[in-house]
Structures are given as C-alpha cells and as structure tokens.
Length: 124
Image 1: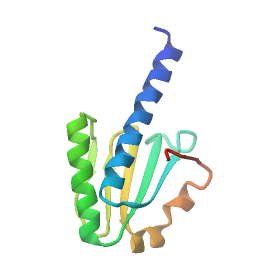
Image 2: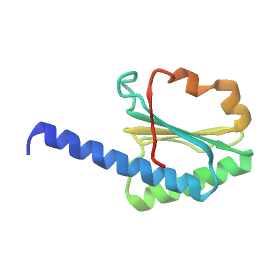
Image 3: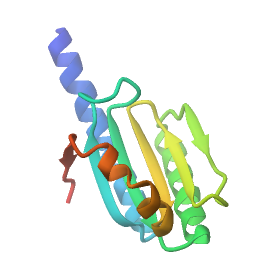
Image 4: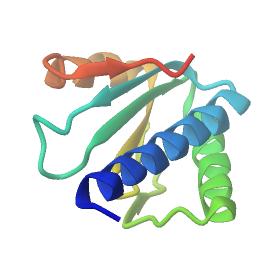
C-alpha cells in the first residue's frame, strides 16, 4: 500500500472517531459542539472538538460518558483531565483533543478565537 493510501486510510479512521465522539457528546446533551481542523496550525494535534455543558455536573457527565465510549471503542488516550471543579476538562486522543467547558469557561477563554484561522468541520 502506498504512503498516500495509508494517509487517506488514517484520515478516514480519524474522521470516523470524530463522528463517534460527537455522537457520545450529543448523547448526553452536549451543547454548541464545534470541530476544527487545526493540522495547518498545530503540531500537537489534528482536530479540536469544543463542547459546552450547562453546569459542572453536566460537564462531568459528558466526560464520564465520553471516557466510557472511547474505552469501549478502543481509541487510545494519551492525556485525560477529569477534574471537573474548574469547569473545563480535556481528553487528548493524539489525533484530536476534546475540550468540555461550562458555558462560562467557554465564554471566558474563547477557544474558537484561538483557532479562527482553522477550517470548521461539519459532521451534521
């Protein structure tokens, strides 16, 4: 298999994982889910998923469900912040990072502005 075919297959797998993550977040009523392709802007990861929670308990529920679904799917995780008291939790799966924030944290840190030059990916 050529290198180009490998790259296309890897990209297809990552996009399937992203769809799966979005479904897991929607399952627990995550709000304002946005996905940014940051491959051109970042050497740390390829995609960033932002999702809002209505409260810290809701953020924790989103994260617990996401962790469970990721483990069941066998997606490798290289970093996992489960501390919900800050109103911001992160899951790092190498090819993508998920930022779960309360609406207040999302408004305060405006991560969308950080990635405003990135293409937004629509999975609807």
